[in-house]
Amino acid sequence: MPALGSQRRLLGSLNCTPPATLPFTLAPNRTGPQCLEVSIPDGLFLSLGLVSLVENVLVVAAIAKNRNLHSPMYYFICCLAVSDLLVSVSNVLETAVMLLLEAGVLATQAAVVQQLDNVIDVLICGSMVSSLCFLGAIAVDRYISIFYALRYHSVVTLPRAWRIIAAIWVASILTSLLFITYYNHKVILLCLVGFFIAMLALMAVLYVHMLARACQHARGIARLQKRQRPIHQGFGLKGAATLTILLGVFFLCWGPFFLHLSLIVLCPQHPTCGCIFKNFNLFLALIICNAIVDPLIYAFRSQELRKTLQEVLQCSW
Image (cartoon, rainbow, N blue to C red; front, side):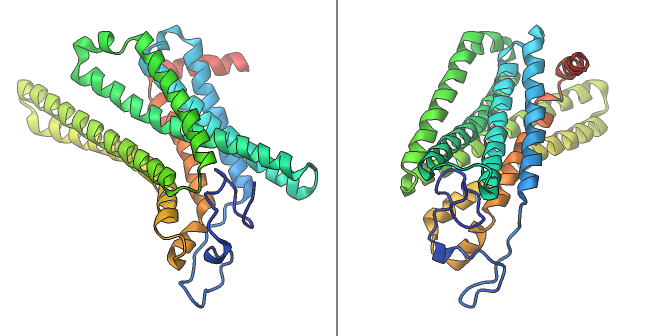
């Protein structure tokens, strides 16, 4: 719910910066820098959320329908889709409630609105943490499948995968409750930022190592076929492009949000930081965009899943 002017109130007090440090107009600030604020209409939030919702529901339905996709790798992808789905649902729900309250259609007590807001904040925070965790789990799963291919099925078993999934969901719920309860403690914000940096580093290291191994494998094949230069360059460029897209999307969609958290700790009173705080809604929109892009990167590239998805769509019509 909106706590500060037109700002969206996600995660309780992420916009809890004192009003004096948070200018809400585009007029030049005589005592500080002129701020550029990107306005995100509520209609756009609803549209992005609904697109992500439909997309991730289709991923979950396709994996649930096809028994050939009932493997640890696809279970991690399915849980990522569920996390992104929850991000979308919570944002759509929050936007809808905000619009109803502003229009006077939904009349309720302030205490009830506060409780509803806390529930939505816990849902959003938990789904964000779980989404990051499952992105990391997918990276680790792919790493093991490449570097320990012969032992993969003995290392990544279904019972072990289920335990990992359960642990991620429990940790996400506990983290969200802890964050909503102690949001005004800088240590909590720093822990979340540190968690993001750790996930980014983990994914970068694993995927770069996987790319290096793939290029090495391509060079070996090229030597056998006596066509080293064309194959190696073509494969290397394709792999580098894929890696850039994967890590670039992750950083661009999640980075601004965690930059916002960092600045709340480092410079809550600085005018320049106040300009960044004004674009909080943009950072949330980028996270929803990530929920739209994730299925394209991790799910829809699978031919088996695309085939099942076609069957799901045909059955629905």
